[in-house]
Image 1 (cartoon, one colour):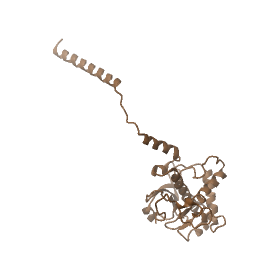
Image 2 (spheres, rainbow, N blue to C red):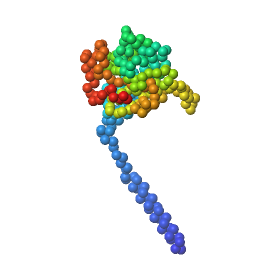
Image 3 (cartoon, rainbow, N blue to C red):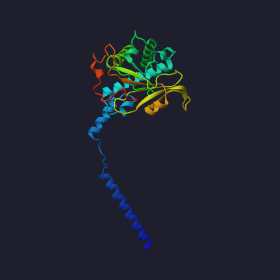
Image 4 (cartoon, helix red, strand yellow):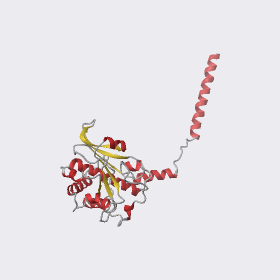
Length: 274
């Protein structure tokens, strides 16, 4: 055997020895992945069990309690359905009813014997349709509509009644129009007052004219990030917010319903987008 052959044989033996060593090490050693902390696991479990399907609000505001998440979602629905009424149900009378002030008590607007009969009927129709409709899951607030998903509530009439009880009796809500209301042919934007201290919130925009997506489908509503700059460049913005001083005389009156004190929220609800 010449020198060259000896060198090649030695190299082959070393390569074989190295391969055996690596395989042996892989059998004996296991890669240890770091385990998630108990606290992290609890957060993940809570989000998957407590958040509604699209989890938009839960993801944005993980510090809120479940009750606060539900309340903010109800505010989203109130503003969203109001935009729906003004954009799609409007026959001129609704704008006439809502063009004198920038703030309206929801209890006043939905009083069956009050001064806003056109809005009252159209809003109730919009709620009924929303409960019956197939979920959009993309361009609408989270489902179910807060107040109508409880145990034992099965029929659509029961769901509708439960939702109105939540927004009119369990809470005091008002609608705020930072720029007032204008022609229904324009776009309408809706959002809820954030229940943390953020100066912005997720919202929705009913387009003035539908646009076409890449698949040829007509899009009537898009998501929107609502903040002070947005309000400066867009008309017909609708904010649903808690009302500590509603002045109404039914069960939503703060004097009769301590929940309307909203003492758990350390903020002035009148300042958002003002």
